[in-house]
Length: 83
Image (cartoon, rainbow, N blue to C red):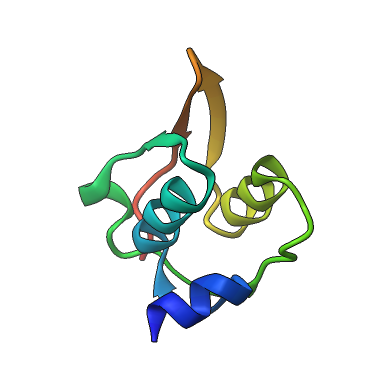
């Protein structure tokens, strides 16, 4: 299940939008992204649970060719449509 995946940060072809939402919950941080733009971005990845939120975001953003910045305690993801 997705909840189990989340606990290990191991994802099989998961929508990156779901991963961002899960990270929001786990880290209690607001992550802003364009749901429609990123809806086709899927990821199979295992994130090291010992690393920080930002290191996880580095990996995720690199995988989908996106970037992020922190603005007023919110994380803002900038990316483009995945094919």
